[in-house]
Length: 132
Image (cartoon, rainbow, N blue to C red; front, side):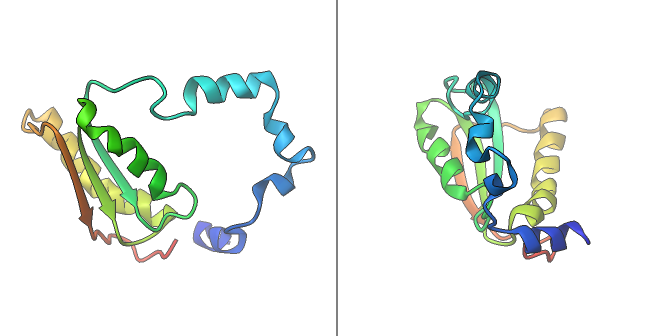
């Protein structure tokens, strides 16, 4: 079974039904400290570096609304470019986002990236035809 087939079979299944203690499996203090320290995006204040953020609008696993909420704080001093892709889903995002990320990285390492402020843009990038 390919990864695309696996996601198709298991999509939207309640993951905690696979755990003996269901959601309580993630309640022990050791897990909570990991989530508190590393798992809540934006809880440590505003990053002082330029960011490139890419997100697929149709992602059903990690929804676009979460990223949109973080980017709402754009006027608070963050310098970012946020591209919202209208094509593909969770798996396609990994391939479709590579081009923009590599382009930004090449510009930064080459001293050519000078973007300041906030730029939020809807794009339509399709490197893969995966519907997932």
